[in-house]
Image (cartoon, rainbow, N blue to C red):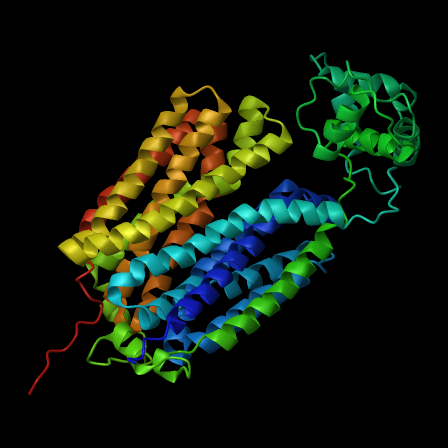
Length: 547
């Protein structure tokens, strides 16, 4: 019986896939918990903006050194260290008592994550044959999208579940964040047309209309929360941004079901929070800390699993036989060596690499909209209810996963038929071009689900292109595959760091439609830049064979 090639390489890619799921799960969970972090620590939105952007700066600047360290010292040990680093600082973030510690842990967390994808590129280049690198890249990068989809679901469930069962529904003495703002919202000095629910709460709190005492205000507010007649179907009929738990209790009340006193108090608490979301601390404000501790502990498990499964090179793995080695490296048995000094002059002189870097800046400026301001856009433009906003925000990431898988298959098949030059270039141009078109359609739409569909098409296009971008870096990088991917990622994430303030500036100075056009134009430039990328233009040319 002829022995068959082992398939250990698939398990190694599965471990890298699991790492990518954790990567985005940890990255996006902080965004879901942001309101509770801000309220718990008494921070401003400006401080939270600095906190969120700190990740991108260290993540971007750490790409090249982290990729080179993996090329030089081995992907197995370095990726294990990277996973442990960002997991430890994720957990430490849950211990933050103020802005400075929060900022330091966020920056260190970004530095740990900076090595994830460059090291994954090294793993793929050493474990997967050239004709399969696009598909393998799609699997690993697709893991990140799955993590992005899971993050809002799991984080929300954990935040709700980790509230103690005996937690009081009333507010305490430090629950008031901004009493003057509460007064202005409920009793504005100048006449403005207020929502019915805000007017209703203002009438219920007339006794403390002019009080400057937070304790007196809380005492009166708690009387309303413990009142059995606080909820009014007519007064709250148009309240859009409502907690799902509260909506479920209202549904039971409307159906005539018996509702416990505790559930009535819970409903009243959530109604008040919905009216004054930024002026009062929410019920879930203490739950964000244990959520981060759980994610940190999960990272230790993932790091251990990767260490157990992977090796720097297939030839070092006891579970890989000669037939699998031949399948990976060909009959020549080429076993990539560990890289030495980073070839900076070769990197700086490579036209294709500069084109790829500029393309990634363009793509990330547009793509980051779905991960930052999309939910805000839905609330401001369409007053979309919170549970529906969550579903809409998830949809682009779900669709993006299919784009990643199909893009990986497409670029590998195309490369086998027409070569890597156009086999990498063409999927990049098509995917990014689709994304540019989707942005430009949005100003003509007047339905939130139609805009969501365009954002899903945009995300599909970006992720359709990602496997080609990864494979391109592996094709030109050789022994420096991690460093080269890190170089491009560095520039791309500098674009990501600039994106949130840039996009919000455009939307506030002009409008959201102008922002969509700008994103579409930037994406179109990115698609055009792909014409300058040539996967046959190696960073370090292979020396000719001499006899």
